[in-house]
Amino acid sequence: MKVAIIGYGVEGASSYEYYTEHGHEVTICDQSPATAVPDGAQTQLGSSYLDDLDRFDLLVRSAGIPPRVILDKSPDAGDKITTQLNEFLRVCPTKNVIGVTGTKGKGTTATLITKMFETAGRKVHLGGNIGVPPFSFLRDLTPDSWVVLELSSFQLIDIQFSPHIAVCLMVVPEHLNWHASMYEYILAKSQLFEHQTPGDSAIYFSGSKNSEQIAAAGKGRKIPYFAPPGAAIDNGAISISGQVVCPTSEIKLLGRHNWQNACAAVTAAWEAGLRDTQAMRAVLTSFAGLEYHLEFIRDLNGVQYYNDSFGTTPETAIVALEAFQQPKVLILGGGYKGVSFDELARVLKDNTVRRVVLIGNPDYPDDAKRQTAAPELEAALRAQHFDTVTSLVRPGGADMREIVEAAQKAAQPGDIILFSTACNSFDMFNNYKERGAAFTAAVKALR
Image (cartoon, rainbow, N blue to C red):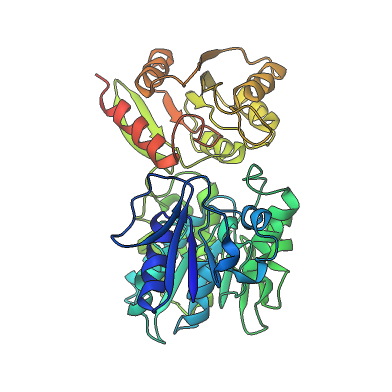
């Protein structure tokens, strides 16, 4: 076949390798004219990367490219569009696949599940949105292998297969600059469950109507967590089916929101047949979290610095605030995704926040989909009469060193400096990892 790989990042590169190895004629299509490609590869780069797609038999969409962007250029191409995830699930030699979605907590939960399997001596592979393309381990799988996939709405929006065990965590408005609406966002998440059969498991967060609605999309057996029969908190400990797994006081992950993630992981592992509660407890008492997820960086002069660059919504900033009792200096701001900051401002006002350091780049393209969040954040803070703000909103955005030094100046011994921006990174950085790395470097450079 003639195959177009649309979007050439880590996922696109592994898709190119897969389809080339299977004897297809592959063309790399990417918006950046400077994209580095393999020697001899056929390419269609730059502003014309979506032109003349009708000449291809298959269009392999990378996760960041919305299907509608392709269809706007090639309205009749719908039946040709697929993704690496779809192809992986189609050819995967094992049915032992666990898919995890939700607004936040996907990577943490998927990692907890994987570590529980590993600690119990099971062979397991972790991939998906966490940064490991599933094609990268496809050849290593056998019918007895287990696979855990962290899956975003970008990956799920046009999925045609559902995993044997599907997990939906808390779902709140997110990525509304990518999705056409909240309805589309929920519909995309629902595809994880849509193709399940009665022999499959549909696990959902009992405290979220959105999650329950999403899990109801298919025929899988519905199992709530954070409430029986899934794992729940009982007498200060995570328990399932009458067995105590781990006291909440021993969970290494910071924040009560991570109790939800822990219960989701225990429920998924239990549904997969893992009954080793000692292995589960060993993981929960030792795993401190992923990089840039409420990550402790250092203590300097009695002030502790935490990096939560992965948190890109008001809800994640709220749970980060609530993870600490100490007074806080909070760094907020970034790209706007069309969500409300009103509840964040209310929580912030009542949550011993000493000062907000507001960041942003007003030169970020000013349209409905791409703009800095600073004006909306300022308005929400003013409505709560919170005026203890240091604004570093300026063209191009302030240097991270200056941002960290402003937070340091506002802090007192015993305080937390919390980098949990409630926004995406795109007005100043390429992604949350680049932003997180800049914060960590600036904190480590403090004297």
